[in-house]
Image 1 (tube, rainbow, N blue to C red):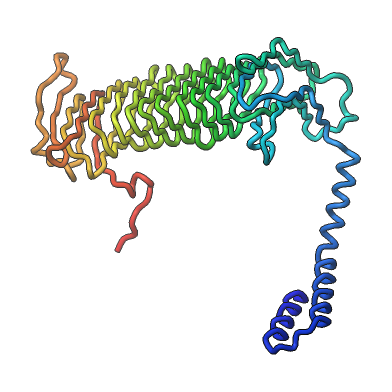
Image 2: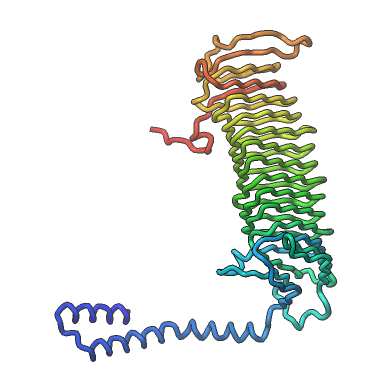
Length: 399
């Protein structure tokens, strides 16, 4: 309020031409006094926090700190939880150093005694390309122990995580990124890599934000794979018993397979192969491209646009077609239910009956002749119409 009054008084004096040097000086003095009074509590709080932090310094030990060129390669085997931080995120300006530090959460330097980790550099070369290889072993049982690796953003990395050690990588841009995970968790946030390869023995793999590049992910045993957005020329995801989920996939060629897990894919763009065994279910939110799908469980899919789609399942297929789909369909099942809102019952032609007499094949045109071709074979098939509103679980209010 006092500052607003000073500003109003200054504007009035300037407008009427009565503003003198002494008046402006008094206004400046009043404004300075107002800011000192307003900020005094906050400055006191910050000083108290600074004194507290100086008396309890977070245990942060530099294990390795060397200069390095802008481009290179790092190969590290670690039994500690590891967080990789490219310099583009760690510093506002380019930093030509590689640092490995140990952070013990909220513990203080006096809380832990003895050596925490041991770094053994097995190879360090500068010609023809800089490369660094080493092993990082945990010597402490402290559960808060975390190691951070700071490196230039354009470095290729090969990381091998032992036992239950977790890995977290954020905002990385490199040509090649190879990750081997044992039983720990692997988290990738906003990565842009020419070629990304992730192998997990039993741990979960999570991709947060946008992951760009040619991506190959394999999770064995009970490892799950989840992703927000995947974009690249070739994308491949495979699990044994774990589930696979992705909110959006933009790829020229993509493949999602599981042996006994479930598949849940949101927006699927491009040419894709989807396969699930041992009674696993498949859910595809929206298909905009070509698809070859095989499953021993149930399938739920919404087709927005396609030229060639083949569906095969030992369970039931629930297919929702967009209003713009035009083309032919061939359905083979013992029970076929087609929504007559866009396909008339008399247009459904019963072609032939199977040899065992358990299923029949129907051919029909959807909204007249067109470029789309859809074939489906299952125990039962349900075909209905779905517009973009219902695909987003939205409804128009009644008039």
